[in-house]
Image (cartoon, rainbow, N blue to C red):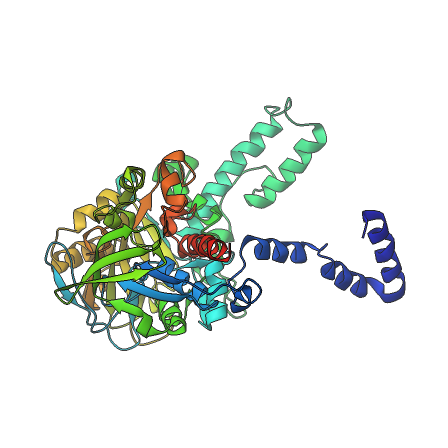
Length: 529
């Protein structure tokens, strides 16, 4: 149908059936934004189907998948839709990789020899790895497909705290007050600059008038273009019944004082594409996702406790050698998808060429740690009126997360630190009890003594010191499309690679899912050809 005929046809539909009929017709023709977006997604990835082999006379191949993290599980799950015979080799005693939810009874031993057993009470947990999902990520598509229920994860909370001790702060500021003050003074300065003609060369008179009206509303400025504080900062006495209109918080700092605190550095966080609200989490813990994938694949196809020791491309297939229970074993398949962490894979002997080895070694692992603090009461809700969200600080704990589940319950688990880089590395060598004491001492500065007195138990986890992972995520300098990584983005004989580290969304499950889809598509096209 030509563009002219299509336009005439739509006019006729609109005249006879109304706007609703025309919109539906446009959708059917793929002309609406929603239809176009859906078509783009379908064009980007099409899952293999058993019917794909019916017309070609070919049959599904066998595939050995190295690593039972999200990328490895997704590879086996998607190939399984077309009948591929998949075997997953996972070094740990559970699938999921860095998707690790810690519950009572879970035991780990890190590379320092620190052994911990979680003592969280029933219903309490901490997501040691991924903990939030943005609305646009295909992770949510898999939650829908696999029947994993989700709930809101509160990423930004106006009532959480900001605390920069190095700037001289002796008490924390509420996020809402800090934001109101920073935005108020910045807009005041800009409004006055515009009013005094500083922007005359960049703006017309009408532009300046429109800008001033915007700034007055955005910064809650008075008629004299001054910021003097407002209800956006919060109340010292909350509004209530008749006779209690509330008292607006009056401890407004000066512009110099608020800029000196450095609290403005935290506001850009919520504007980031991968951090903007709303965000979500699976009900009951992030590991509901790998559990659902494993169930769909068939647990009998996942071999745990299998540490890969060699990968050999034989030309007409692949042989993988591994150890399990102290014994050396091997498995052969038509193809192999290596979905292990690249820093671990780089230690495995192979015959895939020096280019593959050089590319693997060019990927650098990053550090991150978390500690879950279970409390006997949810005092942050009752005493501080904080429900979910993150307190930001320049202390070495960096981020403190309030749980986004179990509201009004008897107990709750705070993430007492989520730190990265040097901060994480400084906590990692400590014993679990030393980590707890150091984290609690930092939290007391912000929340008071209940941060210590109400503590019931803790569990800490550091990814750089976690066997068979040894990284929280990975850095690919130059991006995954840099020529140095070409040996990994293309098949190395009958071996392909997958992982969030081969995506532009490293450290997110979305990257692992999308990378796995690329490997699946490459294998399926090759088998069909």
